[in-house]
Amino acid sequence: MQGSSSSSRHVLAILLIILQITSSIAKTFSHKPYHTKRNTEYIRSSCTTTTYPRLCYRSLSIYASKINTSPRLIAHTALLVTFRASKSTSRLMRKIARTHRLKPRVAAAMADCIEVIDDSIDELQKSIGEIVRIRRSNFVLIMSDLQTWVSAALTDEDTCMDGFSGRAMNGYAKMMVRKRIVKIAHLTSNALALINNYASSQILD
Image (cartoon, rainbow, N blue to C red; front, side, top):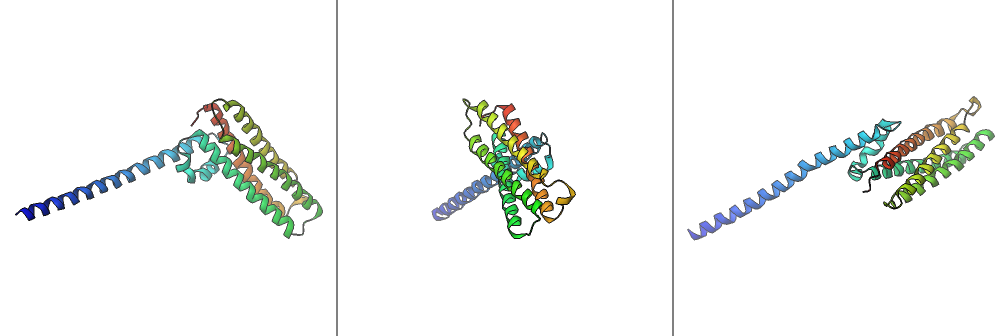
């Protein structure tokens, strides 16, 4: 009888442990969808203030767990996404310039575009480095720098496209460059809008 009682208590203890583990797992999975939904809804709401909200949401929603509901992190992530797209575009333009026989005028426009996009990349890189240094004591100064640099990056991208204006510039190079430059200009515009939102919120996190 004593052995049977001991065995019953052992089984009961195991069942309690299993129940606790099951309960813990259930809580983890029940909370995760809530937080994910909250984060993605925050991104969707923030993106409505940008000029290209669909692109904004599409480019940032995959980083929802990182962004959480932080004005700084959404601006920071938008800068990173724009920086990476700009670097990719710069590499593509260099490849086209190197591997295609471009007309002299197109080649000159491509060289100018590469130069200004590299300037844009530098400005975005400075912005990424500065946004992580924000404190209450330097908030206004750094936000002003970010707005200046990202605005300059946007101007650089517009300058690139101006170099390809006119029917004489039509062709593969213009088509490929325009497609990429338009995208990074839209990403930059969205990043600037999110930076402006962050500046207005004055929330330190």
